[in-house]
Length: 447
Image (cartoon, rainbow, N blue to C red; front, top):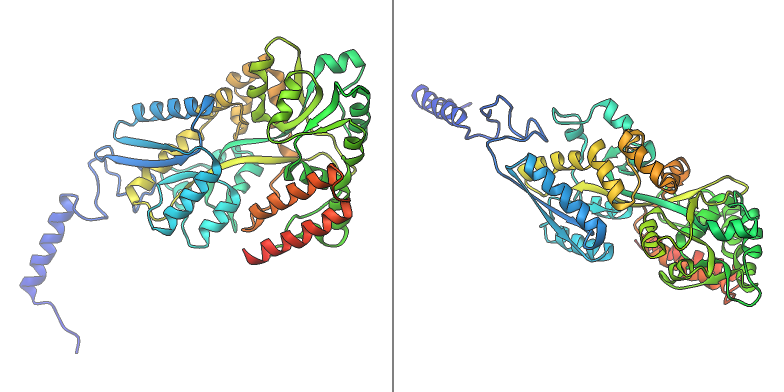
C-alpha cells in the first residue's frame, strides 16, 4: 500500500524548502543577479561567491614564468572574487608524475597543462572533466569562437570526439639557418630533402671546423622524415602496436632511420647531445639547426647582432612537407569541486582569448592558437619586426601529433635511442628498425 504524507507535515516541509530556496540554501538556488547556480549554468561566475583555482603548470623559469604570472594577475584584477594559485613544476616529467599521484589519491588540482597521451591515461579513470557543458553554456564558446581556433589544435584536445582540452602553449619544428653563412656560400634555404643534403655538404669544411648541421637526434626528427618519405600512422587504432613497423610503413621508417647516416659519416652532420647543438649554431660552427619555434628566444639573445639567422619550414620529402606539433593543452579535472571548475573554465577562456593569446605569443615565442590572434594588428606588427616568427604558424597545416597511445612515451625514448644508433653507425638502419619495432610493440601492448 502506498504511504502518504500527512497534510500538515507536508505543508511544513514545503514551507521549509521554499525558505531555503529564498535564502540560497539549495544547489539549484538563484543568485541575486538572476543567474542559476553553477550546476545548471556551468562556467558562470557568481559575483557574490569566492572562488579558488589550483593551476598546475611547468612554467617555472624565464619568459614563460613571467608571462603566465602577468596574465594571471591581470585576470584576478578583473575578477577580484577569484584566486588562481599557480603551482609551477621544474619539468613536464615532474608535472606528469605529480598529476598521476594526485589523481590516484583523489586529490587532483582544478586544472593543469597536459599532453595528449597523459589525457588518454587520465581519462581511463574518468579523471578529466568534459568541456562540452562549459562550451555550450551561457559563458561558453560560440560557433564563431570554435571556428577561430586552428582546427588541428582544437581536434588535438579531443578524446573520442569529445572536447576535454583547449590548446595552450603550442609550437612546431622548423629549420634554423645562418643567413650570413648561406649568403656567403651562395646557398638558398632548402625546400626539399634532396636540396638539404646538398646544402649540408656545401656548408661543411673539410678540416672539421664547420658542419652543415649540428643535431641532437630524437624521435620527432625521425617522425618528420618518416612522414615526408610516405609513412602513415605511428600506432594502431587501438594504440597497442606500432603501425610504423607494418607493411609499406616499415620501409619508410627504416629509410628515415638511415637518411642522415651517410652525411654524419662524411662529417656534414655533427651529432650532439641535449641542447649542445645550440652552442654550435651560436658559435657559427654549424649552418643549420632543427628545433621548435620556442627555441628562437634561446638563440636570439646570445647571437645578438653577431650574425643574421632565420627560420624556414622543414624540407619536404616525396610525400610532402611535415612538422611535429609540440606543447600542452589545458584541462579541468573531474574531481575538483563545482565552484573551482566554474572559475577554472572562466580563467581558461581568458587565457585562450585573442588578446591574451597575442600577449602570450609575443612574450614566449609560442604559436598563436587562434586565427584572429595571428591576423590581429598587434601580432602582425610583431611579425613585421621579426618575420622569422611567422614560419611556425604558417606550417601548422602540415603539423601532426604522432600518437596519444598510453605506451607512446616509452616508444619515444626507444625510437630516439635507435635513431641515434643508426645515425652514428652503431647499428644499421635494418638492425635499428628491428630493435625499435620489437621494443615499441612490447611497450604499447603492455600499456
